[in-house]
Length: 231
Image (cartoon, rainbow, N blue to C red; front, side, top):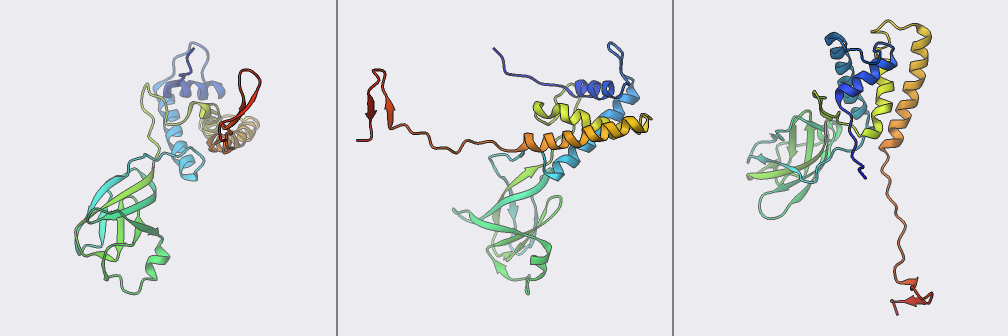
């Protein structure tokens, strides 16, 4: 039995066009229609991910970048940062935590030229960080971050879970209803379906973990006699 299942960008495109009544079975998609759908998919994916309704895209290994003595800012060098999560600073053998702050908190710092081991970092998208205190020695920062969702690519599965594809199809179809000149009555129906699809995406994105403790020290053995290996 197999549990592996994928859908390509082209298959999602065909689902969208079929829902809009723009593609009959066995019909070949025009280049212009394909380009229109791909752009709509990519734009929607970026927006949905920014809204935070898709699954987390955080790698287990932080990215590292160098901090120079006397220089307040440094670039993480990764243009795919959606938002930073956790950062540390190393100028020896230990990783010291750096708290990521917002513009208001950074603006309230009275003397931004103070030097020392960095304790705070202001993120200036897409890759720049400003540190306080300013590093007084060369060191290394380690950054864990949420990654921007990938663009779609030919003959490749979109960067969403397969369980989300049906909902994504409904949303993109609504986005393109005006482009393909659909009547208002149909657009209204597609809008309702798109709203339900967004709710489905939110539900599908929820982490599901069983927190109940499994009791293993007391159970009935194969003879039907209750045993307790804890005593």
